Structure formats: structure tokens, C-alpha cells
Image 1 (tube, one colour):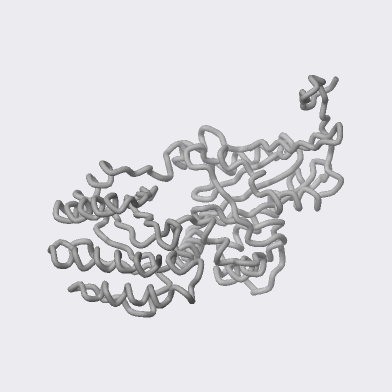
Image 2 (cartoon, rainbow, N blue to C red):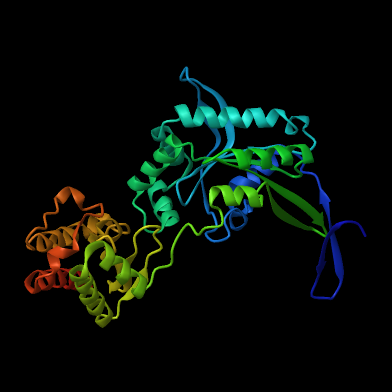
Length: 369
């Protein structure tokens, strides 16, 4: 038996799967398109594993002249809106040694300089049948507009990720990847080997990350957690420090009210600000209504209230908006019914204002049942 993968079946028989080359580069490209998780996000960031959503296969990259001279094999975005440019080659392709490096650097330089986020967004919408719904599901609690704004910010800052993908990455290319990943900051340069093992009517794909050296992690802060898991204690401490004891008192009263309604309290994972969002049962399902942030703000989550049935729920959202606007200092325009407007937590400090807020939320809940 050679150097392969061994499987023990239910009958106790040992079967061997042997490594085989891909029949074509297009086959490996298609696998990545269908199964983005083949890019090992947990190896790139163990504390906060990277997740991927495809923007476009064969993504055209503009040049200074405005025309699209090249196309990357894939363009993905991760959950932090970092553009991830992928170039796929087979080990038998002689260009994988050096030529592909210059090719990728061309992609990166021109993408950062000349790639409008509007064009990237258009590519994404062309690729996905329900682009807004799929993006919302991918982002968890982020606002789509904020997400695309962060894509633009990352591009402008040169915060991109270059991924060389192959069935086997030669030693020469691995050395170049490791060198570039140490030297390039904030850009990230990595390689992924996706080996194919075949036998007994089965196929196994085994990804391996290349280029994430200890030196690169130290230089780029890769050992630090990208997110924080907030809880009641850490949230309250942060809120007191940022907005004062009175804001913390209001947040505590809102938490108590939410718990009394048997809401599910979802604690945020923000890098800078903590948050909690009560998920309250409405219409037979748990849904979002508002969130409180440790920067001292309350967010009304109209966006999520209307995500499933926007037309049917618009009247209910508007009635909630009108009731909230009775609180002194709160003025939410009707144009924000599909967004997540916010106001200062301190506006709910007085008993009358707090009661108006709670009554507005309870009215919306009753209206939804």
C-alpha cells in the first residue's frame, strides 16, 4: 500500500484511497466554487475561523486605463468584508513556480487601485439568485450597506487576501508565499493545497494551508482574537465606562423586561462595542426588535423585522416607528423602515420615556401575533 488515505468500512475492511492529479484546472476551480469551505478558514484564523461567500468566478480586474485586462479565478469575501482573490493552478503547470506570483501581484495592485466596490457588488448580484437574502444570512447581524462600505474601506487600505490554490504547491512557491506573507501588511498571502484521493468509488479532498508562519502571525497580530464574546458583566462594565452609570441602569431595566417576556438574549461579538438583542416571539417565531450597544445607543432593527415579508410587515413597522417617535428626542423618519436607526440610550432614562418604549415594543409584538 502506498501513501494514501485509509478507510475502514462497516464490514471492517480496510480500503485505500490514493492521491491522484485533477483532470483539469477547471475541475478544481469548480470544486472551490461549489464548496468554498475547502479553503480552511479555521487554519487562517483559529480564534475566529474565516467564512467565505463567492462574489464571482472569473472576476474581471480593471486597470488604470479602465479596461479589464485580467480575471481572477475566484473572488470571495470573508465575514469581515476582506476581498479574497484566488488563483488556481495544477502542480503540473510550469507557471505555478514563478509566473503565477507576478500574476497575483498584478491582480492585487490593480484591484486595490482601480476596483470600484460598485462593480464588485454588481458581480455579486449577478452570481446569486437572492443576493440580499444570501448576504444577510452570511453576515449575521451586519447591515448590507455597512458591509459593502467595509469592502470599499478594505480595498482602499490594501487589506486584501491573495490565495494560491493547487493540488500540490511546490517548495519554491511555498517559500515565496511565506516571504510575501511576512512582508506584506495589511495584505495577506497564503497558499492552499487541495489534494485529491480516489478509490473504491469514493473521493476525498484534503485541504492544507501553506504560508501561515509564526513570524507572519506575530507581525500581523494573527494570534489575537478578532472578536470578543460579550456577556452581561463585560457588557455592563463597558457601557458604564463609555456612557455612564445612568445608561447602564436603563440597559439593566431593558434586560429585566426582556427576560420577563421570556425573550432569547443574544449577546454580540463586536470587536469594539458589546451588544445584546432580545429575540422575542412574534407570529409564532422568534424575531428581532431592538438591540442595545455598549457605546450607549439603542438600535431599532426594522431591517430584520421586514426581511421575511417586507410588504406585509411595513404597516406594523410604521406603527412602531410612530409610537417610538412619541419619546422626547426620538425622531425616526419613514425612510428608515428598511434600516436599523438608532438613538441614545439616555433618552429612555426617565420613567415616562422608558414606559413609552416598552409599550411600543409590546404593541408591535401583539400586532405581529
